[in-house]
Every structure is written in C-alpha cells, then in structure tokens.
Amino acid sequence: MLGALGTVKGELRMIQKIGVVGCGLMGSGIAEVAARRGLDVVVTEGDEANLARGRSRIENSLARALKASKITEGELENTLSRIRYDIDLGAHFDRELVVEAIVEDEAAKVGVFTTLDKVVENDDAILASNTSSIPIMKLGVATSRPQQVIGIHFFNPVPVLSLVELVTSLLTSEDVAERAAKFASESLNKHVIHSKDRAGFIVNALLIPYILSAIRMMESGFATAEDIDTGMVEGCAHPMGPLALCDLIGLDTTAAVSESLYHEFKEPLYAPPPLLLRMVDAGLLGRKSGRGFYEYKPR
Image 1 (cartoon, rainbow, N blue to C red):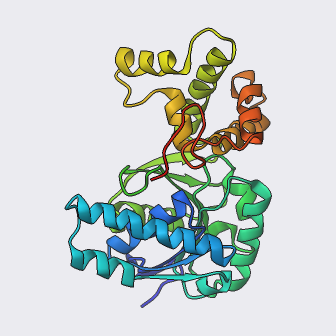
Image 2 (image 1 turned 90 degrees about the vertical axis):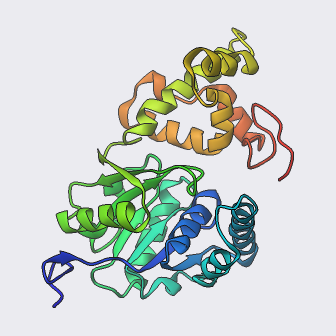
Image 3 (image 1 turned 30 degrees about the horizontal axis):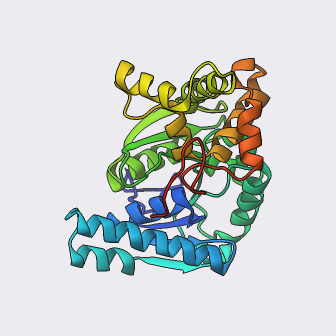
C-alpha cells in the first residue's frame, strides 16, 4: 500500500520513469545513463533542432561505447528504445522524477519549474535540478510543492564520472531526499555526497576559485595557459589543468557559476575575471564551441 511519504510497505519505491529537461552535454548524459540502467526516459528540448542535436549526441556516445566494447549491440539498441524525445514539457506528465538540465540561468530554470509544477500529474513526483550553483530554494518556491524539489548535480561527462551532489533546501522533505539518494546510488550506480543549499554547493565552491585564479594568472601575463596547466598536471598530479578543465566545463557555465557565487557571498575570489567575460561575449566557450583557452577539432 502506498503511504503518504511515497513508500510501499515501509520501503522506498524504486523510481522507474524519469524525465530530463534539456538535451545538451549534461542532459544527454543523464538520459543516456538512466536508459542504460534500464529506466524509462523522456527527454524534452525547446525546439526540434536542439532535440535533434541532443538525440545525435546520445547516439554518438553510445556508438563510442560500443566501439570501445563497453556495451554490446543489444545493449545499445535496448538503451535507445528506452528514450523518447519531445519538445513539450507536458510529456513529463507521468514521470516519477524529472531532472532539469538546461542552461545555468536562474530565470530560465524558474520558468521550467513553474511549468513542471503544472504539468507533472504525479503527486509524489520529485522535481530535481542539475544546477551547478543556483540555490535550490529559489527553484522550490517557484512551485506549489517545494518539499519535493531537490538538487541532483551530476558531473561532466555523466557516463564517466561517478559523483553526484545531492542538495536539499530548507523545505525539501526527508522522504524526497531519501528517494533521490536511492535513485542516484542504486538506480544509477553513482557515488552520492550531501550538500547544504548554498551557491556552488561543495565541489564548485572549491573548484571555481581555483579556475578563476588560473584565468587571472594568464590574464596578467604571469604565465601562459600551457605552463599553468602543465604545472598543475605535472606538479600536483591533476588529471588536467585548470584552463583545460574550464574549456571542458564551458566558459559560459564557469562564468555563470562564478556570478552566482559572487552574488551570494560577495567575496572577490568568486568574481569572474574580465578575460573570462570577454571570451564568453566572443562565443569562445571551450570544447563546445571549438575554441576557448585552446582550440579543438570537431568530433
């Protein structure tokens, strides 16, 4: 029997139907991982062109996994069969959990949550955000069910990196937190860490000042991008340097997280350097645009 807190016979239900809003680098990765783990996935995008690009991104990722012998042909076909695509947020009406993974913009995310609150019919559904920095409370109060809103922050590339930050607001219910943790750890086989609802959460609150320091060092002429990155890779055993990492994350995302952190804490170390902002204005966003601190060939 279903209890008020979403339990069956005293045990937490396993989530089977998930929705993903946005099919960019993060959304496509979340959808792929969920489908590979046997879940029923609905993905939505704002228009047909972006939806087609997202679908191609998922198909190409699975093709690379097949070529690397990480999955079989049958697993590839089964994964694709579990994903449905749409441009209408109403397609999430029957989902048990919906993960928002759109651009790191507070107004845009609030708009998504306002709409999801209206179209998701399941009274027990969890509404989650993959935000890197925006406080979950701001998204929760845009709905009539803030107790069911939570942050489930994945890391790029989602199919490769195992970490998930689980972020609860002051209003997130204990049941929702437990169900979300179970979903991430058991359904998706991710490693879960728990954070309070502060801008940047755990990882980005530590990582972004480090990246911004590297940008300021390059901006001042103190050292080249190559020498900064080589210093951290060879001297500190980091898998990649801070500027290469910024290119991987996306300069626009880095700037958005930086601005969110600075807005909340007003500490200079969080302020985006002028060089970062100019590069974003120029469309030099890193790997996603083909050029950031380094140049990249199309995949």
